[in-house]
Length: 213
Ligand code: SAH
Image (cartoon, rainbow, N blue to C red):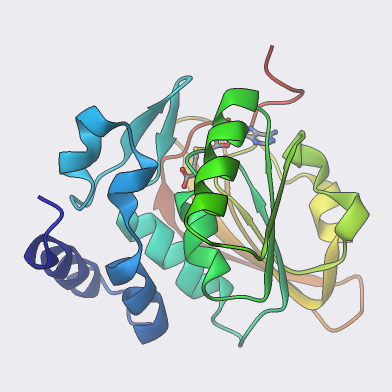
């Protein structure tokens, strides 16, 4: 079920859907997605589908992980990246192999603890994770060369723009359930001008405010 052939079939599917970055495809091919899921679901890990991770949250579909990562890296290599919504830690693991340092925040404590342990166990040492409301970014380590949100706010949290380094790039789904769009926002040099491009319609869990209790 987690065989080389199953993984190869997934990569093929991502290519057919238009993912072109070889480095992203290579990382997805070798990252053990089955370890980020409950054992009962691990046999479905290499299907191109979103899967539940408990607490009403989901591990994103591989296509969307690939697409967002490819967009994030589309303007060149990145040093510091902030991820909002650690969830299972799978997207974090993918990023950890492609950028220098990943900062990730999650609002649900059991999810954060589980993924932090797993990432450590798998040897991703360039990750810092915190329990926090990512709607405010993570100011302590700002600015970031890239920010990626894996949960969708209704509108753009301004705070994230302030935490983008010059020429920084933000990849984020925005909008209410059923009407979300993936957006790519780029800070132009060190100015306070930002260009914005709508990429495609998407479906994400909502970005919720405050910590879960
Ligand atoms: N990147 C994850 C996707 C998880 S789904 C993965 O690869 O598995 C999105 C996650 O965002 C959920 O775990 C949810 O709890 C979290 N989330 C939602 N609102 C948030 C907020 N304001 N701050 C931090 N995390 C948030």
